[in-house]
Length: 385
Ligand code: G3I
Image (cartoon, rainbow, N blue to C red; front, side, top):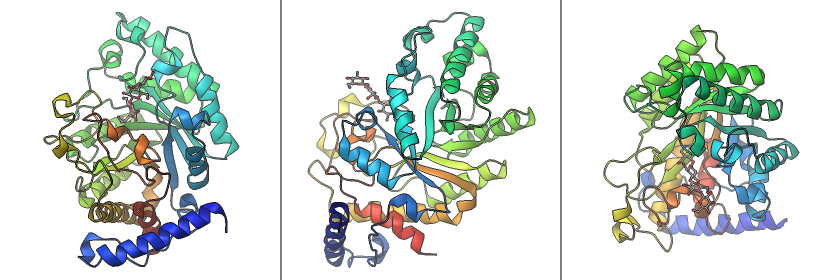
């Protein structure tokens, strides 16, 4: 037995014992106790259903985090760069491009025959400083066109899908007044998709956003898809970020996302899936990166599991993942990819957002690079009706 399979077998016995102790409380709180961890990789279990991806950080891309790299290349068949292909890193100064990490990212995907995602071409956040000070629409158009053309052309035929425009909508379905909107006007998204399609006609071109479960925001996105399609502009799908928690959104709300996006004739990709187990300040949902609650830093009620996740919550997380994946599988014909926003809990952005310095557990692998019960439950979802 390989070292990895041994680890998996140990984890299986461990979780079976935990389940004997804790699953007896209430069947509805737990995943089925007859789970078996297969030595097969995660993506193999989803063969014929949809791609299974992970966002990877620079340490993994550059090979400094060998364990993470091993998990990523074994368990997943798609990768997304968590930060490395964002504008501020690729083009920090006008026409000064730095592709050193991006090239390694693409190389990693090609070597492992993965579906490679580019994230994100046009986003108001993590943008280069010089882009914030542009005063004319002509100049803005020129910079955006140059960025899209230079980056997409470089990886033509290598990067399979681009998050072309990211987070362009407000919660009420109107367009966010970003620097792009302000300088290029309300048709800027259409324009950017056209530039991307010209630079690589074969790449999948995605519009990506969070809080798509909210009907008003989703309506704006659906209008965009219909508009682009009626203009003859290529759009290959909607990316639903899926930064969710143990209770929200409901399965019904998630199902409605899938049905509505599919009804406008494009597939859904769940592009940034993670499930926070921590209390949320006020009614905060989604992934608005500008929000943070510094006054709550160090508040123990906001960080209840600094030394490990109690079994009951571990089970709840696993059950939530299993329910979500059962739903995804039910709609497999409408879904092209599910990507987790990270690999190990310890690297998740959710340890620092919206409150810095917390200990969150949103992913499938724990702080010691071991598969969690949620890993099994995701696989188990493929074995049931
Ligand atoms: O680059 C600096 C580095 O020089 C410095 O040493 C380090 C110290 O903190 O910070 C580094 O920058 C951080 C960057 O990630 C790269 O690690 C920023 O502080 C940090 O704010 C940034 O967070 C990223 C966030 O986007 C920024 O908006 C998260 O890692 C990343 O997971 C998150 O990803 C976004 C998606 O792109 C879009 N959807 C929402 C999602 C979650 O916010």
